[in-house]
Length: 68
Image (tube, rainbow, N blue to C red; front, side, top):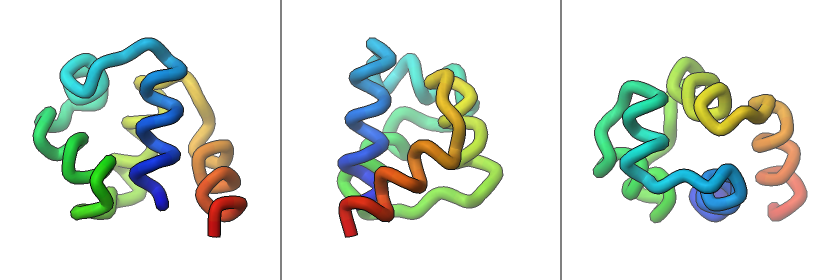
């Protein structure tokens, strides 16, 4: 579920996986794994991703909760 929400916010921010990865300091393949729900981010990485997209981590978490 997190992957779908992450992809939504990334696309809404007009970012590619590569751009998000660069801004958050992670590998692009890691973003792909997150979006396919193959990996789960640490809290630190979650905050870095959200900062890079210009959203609050709580916004992303609320969306994930709503999808459950």
